[in-house]
Length: 229
Image (cartoon, rainbow, N blue to C red; front, side, top):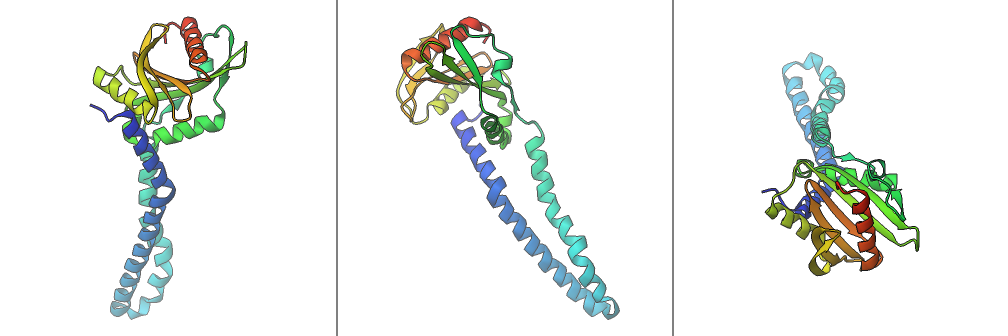
């Protein structure tokens, strides 16, 4: 069984932090260790071949150091780009939702989502694509934010339970609920927003709204316009 979504997201944050800081420190340590090793080599060379002492001293910084520090950088790049998670703008795939304007997620938010999710191989093996959209009610401008997670395959019951538990996190007022025929979990998010999470086939859906009524209305309209979700 794959780890829960909550665990996977935590791993993604750790991986991202490592990329920005801890891994950089490791690289610095590698440089220092390399320099020490090269100096020792120079000293040995000096004892054996006095006439060529100047040559190792000149060549060591340019020949040995780059070779030593390049390895971790190359490995990290291959790990992160082996199977990157795709970002797909839902507005390019969804049918128009009656009574709502569909607004794509800002580019910065999309990039942040991809970077966070793609930072860990466990997440990459579980989630194939992500996409976010806001549904704005044409009647009162109430906003419902929806995040889609395209999974590689439909999860079994245990994995679905893990997924929903991870999504809820520290949410409150958790209860089973059905919206437009889709069974999932209704809860109040940590910021006070009414929320709904469900898994339908190989698609996970997370939605938050202004009120529970506006959330339910938006999701109902979304499913009505896109019955294959």
